[in-house]
Length: 326
Ligand code: F6P
Image 1: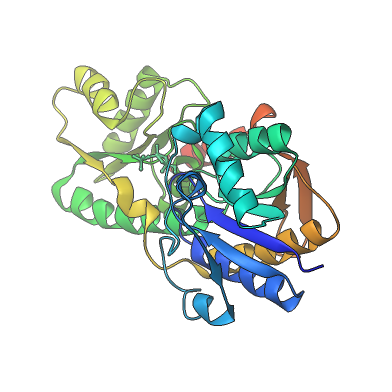
Image 2: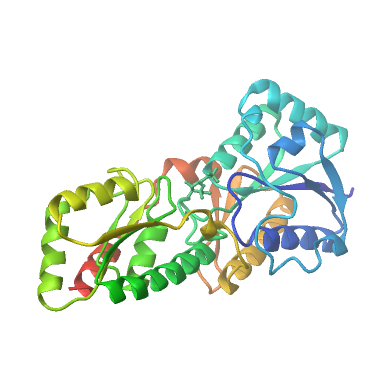
């Protein structure tokens, strides 16, 4: 019997979600499934915003940022009543399975939905934060990282021209991946992330040393979820220790979420979308399909583990940033 599979994107959008939807839809159709878009994440299930997609409906989108089936953070789906409405519509359309592209909040929702109604469901990691256990890359991380690097390079130009210290806030509510990796890639002087404590005294002493040897600028990258608060709080604290320095704050913000997906994000999205259908056809459920590297390895991780086991940023990345910017 033909399998009917719904696909939705949920939570914050990330570049490469369109490529993932395309891969899910085309692989499904290739294997004789009927494929359905659910508009605006779980909200679309609740409000019965569900429609069939054909091969052509996902044409020309692999290089587009955002998500053409839209996304939402659904408060209603976090309630039992909301999930019941969603299930009623799921059944009304005769759906057999669901592919959810999103982050840990979306996976929580899918996990509950599977537990309550026994539906078949698979998650694909779609978030710029790269904070899901069991996958080396999340779809959208590489593009967001490259955007942050591009912005920070530009800030370095103006910082050097004026002999300034720039505090740059990047995204990451609970996660320092964009901060840690952009720190290395831009030669930042230091990086503050939620996962590790900040040492302001050491930072400022290193900044002074750098100035004494003739450095013309400094960049401190702060993840928005840093335990000291975001860039604004960090700026205040540094100003207290270095009152004579010329300091500016730049918050990069949602620019990191948009734009044409990088080649890596398109490749990761295509691979994972393809694998999600094969996994569904083999009867798998309640898992995330994760990416383990360009050599084509994928992982199948129980949804709960993706948020219960914490993905750790290697301390070496932060050490490298400091050592290489002496
Ligand atoms: O999707 C992840 C993320 O971009 C976080 O890095 C950030 O804290 C959050 O979403 C912002 O969410 P919103 O778009 O709802 O402001």
